[in-house]
Amino acid sequence: MAATNRLETERCFLTRANIPPAAIRTIQASRHPSTARIYESTWRSFSTWCSTRHVSPTSPSVADDISFLQDGFDSGLTPSTLRRQVAALASVSACVSLASVTKDPLICQFLRGASNLSPPVVHRFPSWDLSKVLVSLTQSLFEPLRATSLKLLSFKVAFLVAVTSAHRISEMAALSIRQDLCVFHHDKVVLRLDPMFLPKVNSMYHRSQEITLPNFCPRPSHRLEKLWHTLDVRRALRIYISRSASFRKTEALFVSFQPTTMGTKVSAPTLGRWIRATIAFSYESQSLAVPNRVTAHSIRSAATSAAWATQASLEEVCKAATWSTPTPFIRHYRLDVYASSDAAFGRRVLQRVLPS
Image 1 (spheres, rainbow, N blue to C red):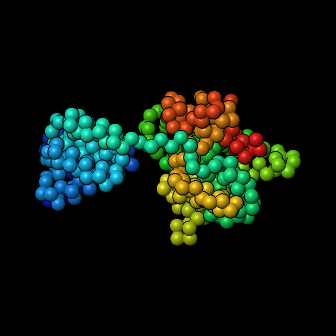
Image 2: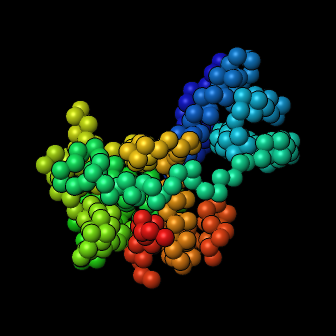
Image 3: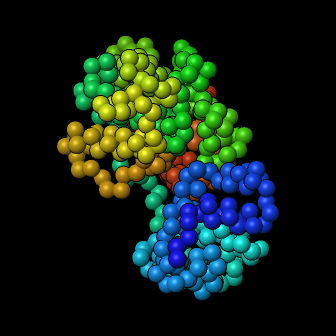
């Protein structure tokens, strides 16, 4: 018989172990909400799998665990997904006994074998061209910002914030227009995360990082400078906040333009869809085929690589992407052919629209 949800199962075993209710709540708050959702999904799958095989999900054998993992591997799950599944199962098994699934020698060997049989595919570069999207954002589809549709205004602002900050989509969803969290200066705008937001890496370094977004060609004097000024993220944010003021129902920076949810806070997945749609619209407006494998996360790749290509320092790149060390950038994003101030990162990214 299938077990109840994972949190309830965990709570039952902790209660049997005489853990006080207040301590149980603290223990169950240890995981980021996104991690808890992944664990819950895995637990439901595992419980269903056990139910069809008349296995107790709370006391499976190592052979049962490995069989479950093998079925997932056979169905196309990646080794990294299997490792997350093991961590999810371990969150319950650790409450049942002192033995940890993650430390079991056979399971460790299984995961190593899965990695050898299905090594991860490394995508060094995004499948889309940042320059092409930036060029499109300067054209009539997205301009003038005060006259374009709320939909295209939202798409452009979300894309510019993402590409000039290189922050995660989840962090963008936690931005606010509160006066202390959104500060406009003459040459930049400084954004701070909502203090209640838990970033993916919940450290003081990541919680305290400010997002500094630059102006771009603020005093244009000739035709090309006027064109480039349309990529000024500070200008775009000013217009977006002004145009959304009459219908917004929240202090969250990004709000819905859909009639049924107009003015309400949008989720991180919605922001991801906006960014993917911006890339698609940009390609279609230039009669270009929309690339495959366009992901919202790839914008971090495009932004950090573009900044590196225009000679941003490694410190600028890491700070913008809230990496405490350059390892993620070097491992995933760095352009091998290329070897300021806080706002320098964003300006360097926007320079990709300049002719080479």
